[in-house]
Length: 260
Image 1 (cartoon, rainbow, N blue to C red):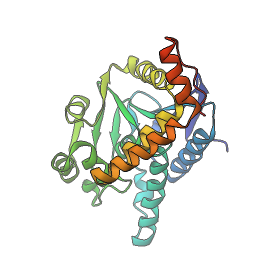
Image 2 (image 1 turned 30 degrees about the vertical axis):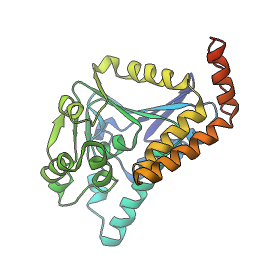
Image 3 (image 1 turned 180 degrees about the horizontal axis):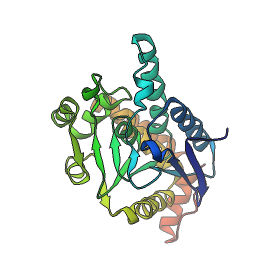
């Protein structure tokens, strides 16, 4: 597939995905959502990719929201399909089995904030602005924001953001736990690359199963979550990577993981 709305590049075991519609602040059109689906399926199935970095083109926005022209045309039936389509793509990103680091280089509003929420980690430039202002358009978050945001920052804080539609600074987003770190704009991608490199140095299956334990365990009781954890721990114990990791530790050398 030839991409018209995003860029996809791969190097050093990292895939770089850039939403590339700077003239409209990288708004998420349906075509853009489809291209993200194709790109992340490709990343999921590429054994030579171990992590992904997701950002927006230009200096003003990560993703400033949905395409309002398309949104204005939705009715009850098409609106539900519109939301489910986006939810499915964001679910793919969240459960990719490989970490996806969002680099918020400016506005991350509405669907853009929801896209960031679906990522494994979120880094923000010090001039970033985040929010779920859908209520100002007479709608609610439709790409998972009403569900992921309270799970990340707590019900009360999420309610305030969603019901007021207030846009917050990167500093406030960091305070409430919405973003992991704040950097200068120039250091945003290099910092994401440094974090990705640390993750890539670890066992690929251990990383994948750790993410699965956290993501799935969040919706379980403590007992069920611990059962899942023990099961995945057992699976890891049967891998070549576990044998190599423990052997390397005892031999005081760097491990050479193979993802097997």
